[in-house]
Image (cartoon, rainbow, N blue to C red):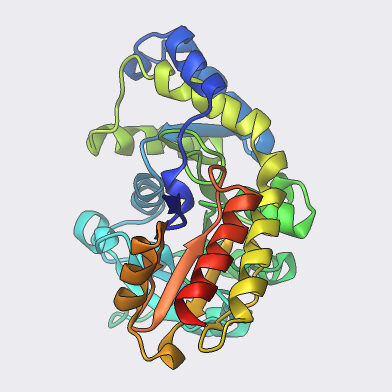
Length: 340
């Protein structure tokens, strides 16, 4: 089975498995797990931030950021299809008591002028704008890269109004590879950033929240409140260290595979590529095949290919560490046979 549902399905490498087995451990709630400490220091260094915190998932990292930045009844500005808004179970409202303020973006990028207009003036009737949240790469837009200039412009607006900026950088290393920029160049456009170790980087579990030292100390308490205080967590941090040191440089391979997949599928009558492929995601419309996304997915699965629904007629395919160049050609060939 060729699994293109997500890059979250990757299996840890042999080196990661050995590292987990051999990891030096301690009680992380007491700050005594040396492997966790090394991972957090390494992550902070790579992102150019003062400190970092290991969290169990990207959603937990984003929610801890909101809880730490904001107070109840604040409003958070975000793109209308942001992961933090669409795919995190309304956790911002349920946990932090905040109100989302959404802006329709262009391939995931918000217009800085619209962001400025969305910031609430002082008025007894209005919530206060507590945070601006960005996403790079942008998942729902098809793994698109939000340009650095756009991020800089929004940060300039935020600084003018003294509002912090958080980045859901779940796939920030994919963005860095696509931009041909060091990852810290992206991270320096925001106050805090979350990124996943368990997507394209291939670690089995975990994410990182990074930012100023004082912020991370307050975030650590929120992690504890959410049940995220871990004990001998070095066993899951050790694969994360390998992921950070060894896996970013191979992400271009995933991007190349995605572009080849889009090229091949785009030549099949009835299949339309919905968005220019910039990283490791391909969005296709199957409406002209007369199929719903679920019907298309079912046909692919019977042919040994897993994919994911992204709407009534939209299907997402995500290249990853466990999908080879040969697998991509097999997918193109099988889809062509199914729908020629």
